[in-house]
Amino acid sequence: MRPRLFVRLLGLCFLLLATAACSASSVAGDDGDSSDDDDSGDDDDSGDDDDSGDDDDSGDDDRPIPVGANVLLLIADDLGLDGASFDPSSPCYTVGDASDDAPMPNLAALCSSGVRFDNAWAMPICSPTRATILTGTFPHEHGVGGPIVGGPTGNALDLTTPTLPRLLAEHAPQYATANIGKWHVSLRDNDPGDAGWQHFAGLIRGGVQSYTAWERVVNGTANNETGYATSVNVDDAISWLGTLDKGDPWLLWMAFNAPHTPFHKPPNHLHDYDHLEANDDVPGGQADEYYLAMLQALDTEIGRLINHLRSNESYDNTLVIFLGDNGSARPVIGDPFDRDHAKDTLSEGGAAVPFVVSGPGIEGGRADSALVSVVDVFATVLETAGVHVATATAANPVDSESLWPLLLQSGAGRSQMLTQLFGGQNSENRDEGHAIRDTTHKLICRLDGTADLFDLSTDRWEANDLYTAGPAAGLETVYASLSADLEAWISQDVCP
Image 1: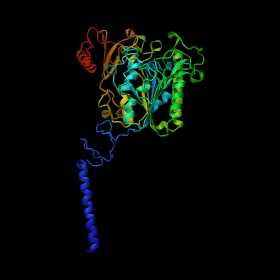
Image 2: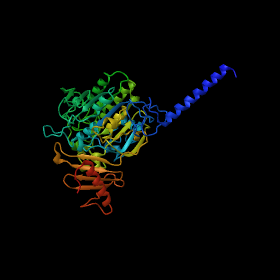
Image 3: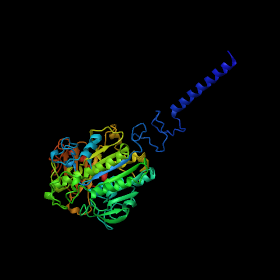
């Protein structure tokens, strides 16, 4: 054999041996530059070298979560399932008579392109829902159990609480954050900024006296506003988006005041109910069509915002979450609910809400029956931003669970949910207490010592109470289990 050929073959042998040794080292659990030293035995080709330290099932990098996507959170004020068909001819939600609902083509399109959650709970009134989303915890932990009352004995949110925008600033500082619209988790004009939002424009308190005469606060400065509130909210959102550099990720919290009272006729170009007489404050008993006009106007303005995102080529990289903050208000509640099972109650008419999510990586046009809660928005947004939720919240644990496993059809959802209503303004007029549900049954334990028990698998809208001086025969174990779980969850003895 020629010397040069021998040397080349010898070198090739050494190269092959070295390659084999490196492969063996990798399979054995290489702790070098890959930073993958968890116990999962993950030897795939994902190249996980980020700093999240995520070694659980919720954040594996081989899952197609669109990390770095924008997030648009759309909150409707006082919109329950009874008004959420969106398209009467092809309903998103089929609750009651869809022919009575307002046409809402933009939300219908969102439903068609996204996931509709059929078993979603909010809190039964606005402030607790907003505080729950903002903190990722339930009312018994963050303290906002009812509408905000000021003063030293009030129930405003403690602004030192870790919040969603604060955690983004700490763990995903590339995200710009804005809160537009209704605040209503505390009462001072500077509070949204003190809670971590980089920008705020909207209403601090719970409602407007008139949709065309209201106090608009922008980053702590209040001025009288005469523009139509729903339209001004979208104007403010578009204006803020225009200040960002193209490609920079953002979280935009859009909390509309609509369709909250006062019921009124919106500007004609926003709806098809032209025959209505102009009125800025319609009595509840005459409000049905005005309410529908407000809903259609809300949808029209949501469409304007979405079209703006499309025009600047950011919509395709935006996760859109739409939800109601509680059930519909008593004067306009529709079938299958009534005034005693509406907003301000722990019934399904008060807590069950529309909840639709659409965006990159999501197979659209499907329904999911998993149990989900508004509290889960918190973890979903953080995970979208690439934040390892368990690490970011280790010092202050949260109740929030990311929706991404459900959005990607790889998870089962919650085993139980919680909704709560207590304290705050006019608390004596409310159905105060706590409710828990699992995949079949729901238990309500009120602060007045009464209880209700329902089998939601056969009685979805709670026509048959199975608790009368005790659980019905055969349901003793169900009651004992749910009551024990509820009291352990909230650390209170509340069930009879």
